[in-house]
Length: 89
Image 1 (cartoon, helix red, strand yellow):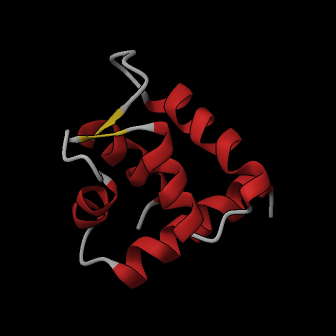
Image 2 (image 1 turned 30 degrees about the vertical axis):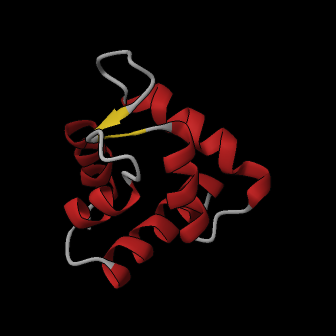
């Protein structure tokens, strides 16, 4: 299993075991209530998913790079949903 697959599996476990839905998880980690996840909010999600602190920043940056369609360096609910759909909960 690749590191990417391991990370995705940990995120899947977090979302399925601790939240009723991906939207509940999104809202929980959207600490400032702006309906978008910042890099630091994504890092908090990754920390809760037990992703190593060493790679948390890299993974958060890659997530933003890969899914930030509108280029605002934040992840909206629709962008988050696209990412989550790829995990196939």
